[in-house]
Image 1 (cartoon, rainbow, N blue to C red):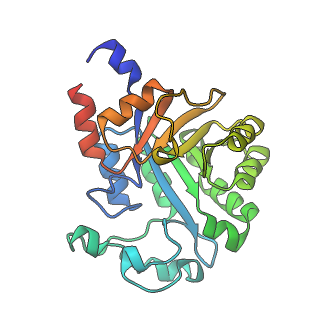
Image 2 (spheres, helix red, strand yellow):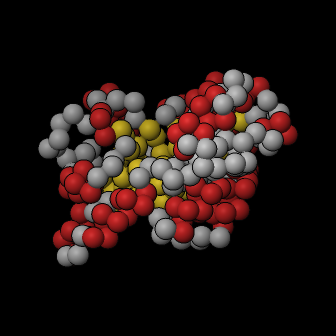
Length: 251
């Protein structure tokens, strides 16, 4: 691989771990991604009824566990008994894969000191418990791996609060790529900006310059990654971890 191409390649973020091959946001998915050599992982956090941060994307368990219940209304002890095998998507290849606590994920991260985790605070929990409580609980648990963590959210107020009350690096997830968003970015000055690839309707212009690093989500090919790297993206997020690593290493 030439030096020029290496410079254009963004780094990969494993979205919810190696979620193409394992149940998302689980310890097997995270461990697989890290064992494959990915240096960045992204996970989602919701809170249980007793305010325990857990790795969950949805606020309900229907899609991942086949249970029609609201996770935010369940005690962490109940949720510890739930298997999130994603039977429909993964065709019943897994049994008894549990919902990890954020503390368990932090323990795994400690075994990979060169890795970085992007920890997304989900809107459902922010609405249910308030951003101050969610931020406080998450920051407390992540203290042992603080230097390896970036806390992210699509909620501007939450990211702003994080900036004010914690030393953690922060990332804002854009809901639109617009002039208004650009102005908010300048005021917030996050460490990272996340944006879905589909929001970038202009495929030629350079991404907004600032003190942040760009991370573009939903990228599933080497060609897309190279194009985004040329526009200023430092990272791309994907669930197709093994496939994308293979393409990147092929050069």
